[in-house]
Amino acid sequence: MGNRKKIVTVKVPATSANLGPGFDTLGIALNAYLEVKLKLYENDKIIYHGEGQETISLNIKDNYVYKAIRLLFEKAGQNSGVHLEINNNIPVGKGLGSSAAAIVAGFFAANELIDNSFTAEELVNWAVQLEGHADNIIPAVYGGLTTAMIYGDQVYYQKITLPEELQIIVVVPDFNLPTEKSRSVLPAQLNLTDTVSNLQRACFLLASIFNGDLTHINKAMDDMIYQPLRKQFVPGFDEVLTAAKSNGAVGTALSGAGPSIIAFATGKPDGIGEAMKTALLASNIDSRIYYLHPDQKGIHLQTESI
Ligand code: HSE
Image 1 (cartoon, rainbow, N blue to C red):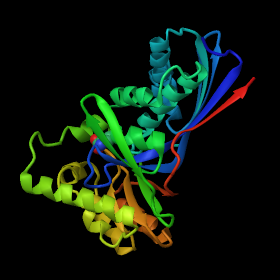
Image 2: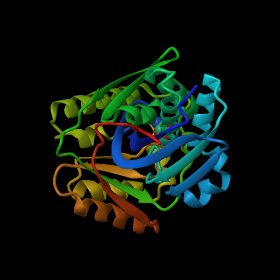
Image 3: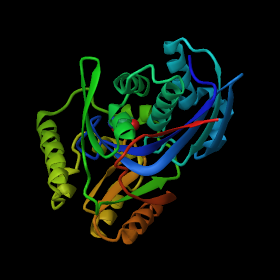
Image 4: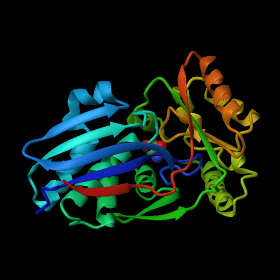
C-alpha cells in the first residue's frame, strides 16, 4: 500500500474556539498555519521548525503530527517509516488550536500518502477523539466559522462564511495555559439563568454573523459560564476586553482555553491590538499582537511526485 514516490504537503489553519458563548461548539479558522511535508522513508526522520521548536523538538515523537500519522498507519496496517518536516507558525499552548492543527495535519497527510483509504468523516472523528475538542478540529479542517455537534459518537458540523471586512486581532500573552488547567475550574453543574443567557447569545452571535450585522455581537460574545472562572488565569483580562472595545472592537473573547484574547473589528484594527497589549502590560504580562483574517478554506493538501 502507498506510493513511495510522492510527497504530501498539508497546510492547516490556527483556530479560535468558543467565541464567547459557544463553549465546545463554535470555532473560527485563522490565517496562521502549520505546514507539514510527509513522505515514506526507510526509518522515521522528523524535522521541526517554528513555534514550539525549543520544547517540542526535545520529545519529537510525542508530537501530535507524528502521533496522528502513526495512528492512521496502524489503522491502515502500514508500518513504513516516514520523513516528516514540520513548519509551525501557530503559537503553542496559547488557545489557538496548535494541537488540533497538528492532529488534523497528521491524519490527513498520512491518509493522502497511503492513497486515501479513509473518508474525511472518519479522519475528523478520529481527530476529535484524539484531541478532545471538535470546536478546534472542525474549523481547522473546513475553515470559516463552524458550529460542531457531537451526537452519539459522531461529529456533525455546519459552516458559515464570514463577512469579508472582518479583521481579527489576537493578543498572545507570553505564558502558556494548559487546557487541562483551564478546564479544571469549569463548574460541574450549570445555573439555568446563565445557561439560557449563553444559549441566547450563541444563537444571536451566529445569526448576526450569518446576516452580516455585527452591531450587537459585543453583547452576544459576553459569556456567562466559563470566562468569569477562567479569567483568574489571565491577569488584566477584563481590562484587555475593555481596552479592545473602547478602541473599536465589535466583539471580544478568551480564545479557546486561553490565555490568548481575540477581538473582532471591521475598520482599521491597529489601535485595538496596541491597546490590548498595553492593558496586559499594566498587569506585567508581555504579549505579541497578531493581525489576522479568517481562513475560509481550512486544510490545504497538495501531492507531488518525486
Ligand atoms: N472548547 C475548548 C475549551 C477548547 O475551551 O476548553 C480547547 O482548546
